[in-house]
Length: 316
Image 1 (tube, rainbow, N blue to C red):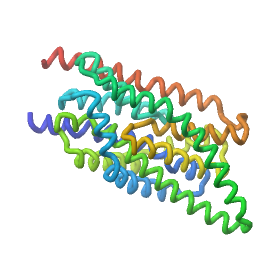
Image 2: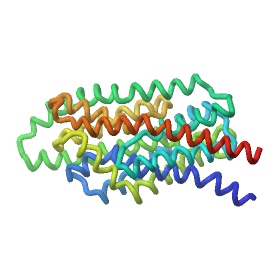
Image 3: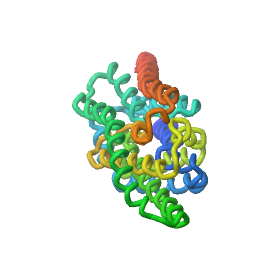
Image 4: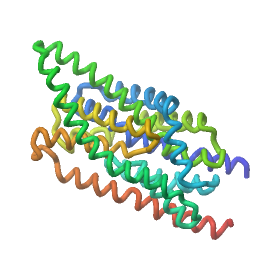
């Protein structure tokens, strides 16, 4: 019985972190890999390292927010994590960048409808943050594009420009991976902190390692959806997308609000598309991603509700 509870405590967040890493790797280096400025292998190693660092250094604030939304047992936390991981894994299989924040919130609501005790104040904070994220990323991308574009255009030598841009890609990508870990580790293990199932340090370390596991093993598919299928980006625009996404997500990490990194990235891509001409935006891909954003919390919420209902009916 003890071994079963141990497995049920650690396997669901491990799967959920793996799903985030597999789906979320695209957000920090996807455009760099798609434009062949950075090699895929180099990208996933850097993402793994800096996601862990971000989780350990600044992941605790978001964990406090998630843990305050609802009080979970080992069973309900495990079912919640499994439901969210299941929905994100499905979307990853179809190469759709989605929000693990939405998946987790959908699962929390699904179980909360049966258990009661949802803290709607904290929940609305996360929901509003999710809505504001792509809008903020659009604005930040447009501003950063104009400011940095002015300075980058001053570089007369093509070889120097190419080298500076590549270094900028790596710095922005590492920053994006750091923001990914800092902001989204709360979605992996936040529900395990509320009842003392994990300490904040254990939650950030375990969450960061599980994200890295997903990045290293199954991130290639979604990696090429961002920046390649949404809008045809030149190298400088791809760099701006990564930087704008990282800035947006890091701001919310400092506020302790886990937000959808996919929406920050897509918002930044659309912001560049608006500057370069709205015709460059692949509307079909954007619509498909939008469908994924809506479907993910619905799937995870329905699955968590049904599974917890069955569990409670049989074992409680």
